[in-house]
Image (cartoon, rainbow, N blue to C red):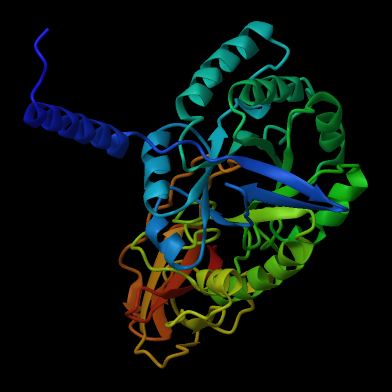
Length: 432
């Protein structure tokens, strides 16, 4: 066999080096080890050997902004399109709590139906295998609020089966399941039926400061996460006489969220591994502003200013405007505002900007939502009622009430020209 000359050998090894380098450069990054360590009576989440406290938000957009404001993780509720969201999170230096979308009893699923449960299990197994090695993956969310309105505790057997499979095939990531509030009977069933759940996750809003006490009282002895939290929900807010909720202004939301974060999350780091603010983006939930941290047009509300301060210790360079509640004529919103059809009225608010930026007002009237969905199910935003605004360029509004009897809601938005907005609204009822 003829020996290769030295120039050919050099060329051969150089080409081999280039091929190996290209392979190494294009090879996907390895999965990152996530674990929990316990010291005395405290729990600490570790990622890649380093302590990791979750400063996160739930949503499918604005990941670059989440990183900019000091967040480090996102939560998504389903594996639909998961590759795109995992890649986007990774690009922005964020981790992902990835939801495995288990079917719900309140939607008609029967967890006593072994065939249906097995089919769901086989489907979700494929999702686990598809994404278990992604470098952005942090935690598996095994079902979201499968306990809500559920009476069949066999759901926790199904949760445990899937969590056990995850532990079998994925040694690098942890499991959790998200509960609506702190239902003590379900927590006791999880402890009995689902030992493969590593972390208990609670979705909590106005009761966030009290969930630690309730979790401990229920007997849970491990760490917990706050899977969703934010402003007061429609299900826990004061109601008008005709049964619709009164929404906090964005300024009130910022204040209560700051208080809830400090009392329910920051002060409980011995047991709480972090949290996901809700909702990073916009989402219709009786109104389009109730739990949304952004408007549809992209402006952010003051809750994000508070999150940045809590996450980084620094105030934002430019804060959102401050707004007062909306009034209509001389009537008190909490007692219910009734208006005659097709009559003229005045509405008012007041707003200011921390940096004295020039602010602009926008008013609109929408039909009151008739949705009765629960648990974050998709809702449709009501239509705007056109032709009612007579004069609405400033903090006072002159408008005509709708001609048709029914429930409506008046919204005002205050923009500062720096991607910030303040929002407020007032429900009213047209009645002869």
